[in-house]
Length: 201
Image (cartoon, rainbow, N blue to C red):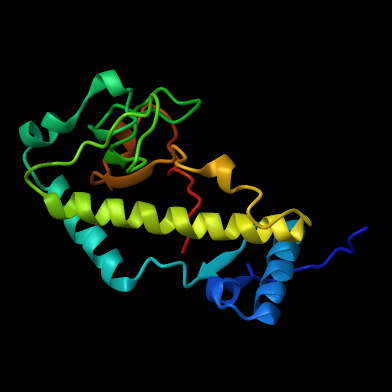
């Protein structure tokens, strides 16, 4: 039975320890990751592959797209895809339990190599850098997630690649999100809370 261990902060682990090729560093990462998930349920990950340069490209290209006129952005809104790919305009999504739509617009990028019924990505012609940056980020984070699952498998005393085939070409979504300026509280008909997010950093 695990003994309770109290943390005063979220543990920070280096993914490079797992991929270093050093058995001792790898084994320590596995145990530290498992312990963090057991004791607090969260962990911050360094060296996940999402570089500062790529992050800047993501922000700048997303800002460029969201700054385009509405009639251009709406070219990439496909209702038949149910919001799974492409652009989704302001007032289209409502938080669970609320009636007032969120004041945001966003863009969804999914699996770069779709299989079966997965929809293909919708890339804006006016801003190819946005497509390049988001696809690169998607692949980078997908790989980081695969490495973490391999570490979890080892912690659970399973074959390291146990989860590989279960997440191959997974249909995750990368969302570029733009909130509009706040409106006066008196104009809101219901209480409003910002979205909650899980972030890999």
